[in-house]
Structures are given as structure tokens and as C-alpha cells.
Image 1: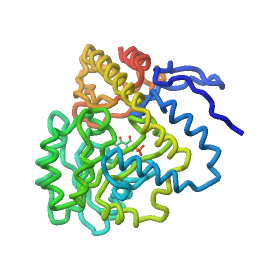
Image 2: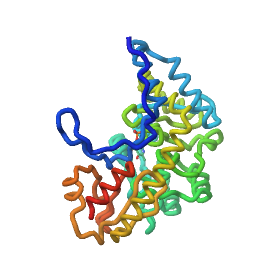
Image 3: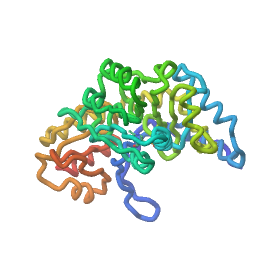
Image 4: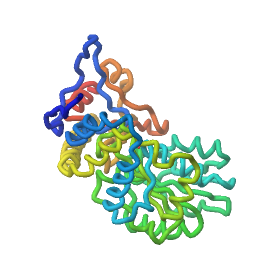
Length: 351
Ligand code: PLP
């Protein structure tokens, strides 16, 4: 049988851009806002241990995970729905809001891959431009609501721009918007900030749904665990959309999530490292006359308007995976904050 393999403390940045056993250069991944420091040692040990019980359905462990998540947010198990990543939650909420035809309101530019689900289910997408400083234009989004609006999506902090909505403004928006439609707030990156979750509002508000993920701060992107937080009636309605609710999370992943919830040091280390490396990255980009939007996340949005080389050619030559141009006007792109060593290589590639 397999025992628990002791693992060194992975909260220390690993060196990257190394050669694998087939002599291929492993690329530096700065594309998908992954956490380069994890998973936490506790999570890795839990995963190894629980491989042994992967022959069983593990409803008890899923119940325990739901219970622990509920406690973390000061809510009950009935407020929580698990998914294989928050992507599954976003898709389910899109289907839930598409039960009657109408429109969905979303910012332009934001995390919108999941809207294909809503559009295929019949919703029409109404995109509201961000403000000049790349924040959600909450008042314009509020004004865009009409009698056909079935949902509004707010990504807070926003991907790809890294901006955050001011707390009070967001609370007022939620209060007004949920009188008229459902609001989905995606808190994938909120743990990188000091702003509290809106989770406590769901006990009184059936039209507010919050999406959370273990992919970012807990460094479990490949384990695929996310969850929805909403009023018990809303959770019940969403979970009735598919068979085997909560069941798409494997026992190995559930054990990793449970262990991660206990590893506060991993979370604070990630935030400390991220802040330090993000500051370095932004300072260096600005030295190169590249304008950056102040970021509250583990990525930075920057304008290539004053950069006269081909960024993507430079990245390719240096074996670095970046993203794309999000907005042609201003040539805006995004880079994930990796380890200090990785970001030094990123800056060197640009120079
Ligand atoms: N929401 C936002 C804002 C994201 O950036 C991502 C992934 O990058 C997701 C949701 C989906 O993440 P996952 O399905 O891994 O939870």
C-alpha cells in the first residue's frame, strides 16, 4: 500500500523553467492566474492518503467539506453547492437564470467564457463597458436592467483588469439590482484582498448568488473544486438542474480542499509572496514605460501602447506562456504573477 509521503515545505518558491525527463523545456506558465506556490503540504499529504479510498463514493467527506465551508462563511450546509471548479457553478447559474428567455448584463472586459452556456440556453448578452480606470461601471449596469434581464454578473475583483468595486458602492448596487434580477458575484480572487465576502447577505436575499473557487488562493486549480453560496431555496433550485449534485468533486479533491481550509499559513504566505512579487513586476513594467492598472489580484493588466516590440514573440522566445490582447484600443494584456524568479525572467524577456 501507499503510505503518506513526507513533502518539503512548498510555501517556498520553486525554481522554474527547468528541463523535464524527456529533455523538454518546461514553460513558465503566466497565463491562467494559477498559484505557483502550491498545493499546500497539508493538501498534498491528504490527496496521497485518500487515493486509497478512491474505490468508494465518499458522500460523508463531501458532507464534511460542505459543513466546513459553511462554517467558514458563518452559514449552514443548505447555503452551499459544490462543483468541479467554480466553472461548473458559473455554468449551472447561467442555466438557472436562463429558464425564461431574456438578457444577461455583464461588463466588457471581464471573465466571460461561461456566458456561452447562457447564450446557448437563450439569453442575450448585454455588455457594459468598464470605466476609464478599468472598473465595473455599476451605475451603468444598474441602468441597463430592463424587464427582460435575467441576471447580472459582477467579477470582484475583476479578471482580467484586477480592479475591485468599492465596498459601499457594491452593497448599494446589490441591494438595488437584486430587487429586479438575479446577481451573480464571482469572488474567485477576493481572498487576495482585504474586502470581506458578500456571503452573509444570502440569508436575506434569494437573488444573490456568489461563486467561489479553491483554484486560486488554495492553489488547487487542477483539483477542480468550487462552490456556490446562496439562499437555501436558491441552492435547492440550482441543484435540481442536474443529477448527482455536489457529486462532481472527487474524494481526492475533496480531501485536498478540507486540508487546505486548515492551512492558514499557506494562505498568508501566498498573499505575502504575491504582494511582493506583484510590486516588483509593476515597478519593472512601469520602468519600461508600460502602464499598469493597480491590481488587487495575482495578475496585472497592462497597456502595450508604448511598447515597441512584439510581446508575444518575446514571450515565445523565452518559453513563457502569456495571454492575449483583451482590448485592441490601448493594446491591453494580462500577466499572472508567478514566483519572483519567474517574474524576473518575464521582465528580462520584455527588455
Ligand atoms: N472565475 C474567474 C474570475 C476566473 O478567473 C476563473 C478562472 O480563471 C474561474 C472563475 C474558473 O475557475 P475554476 O473553474 O478553476 O474554479
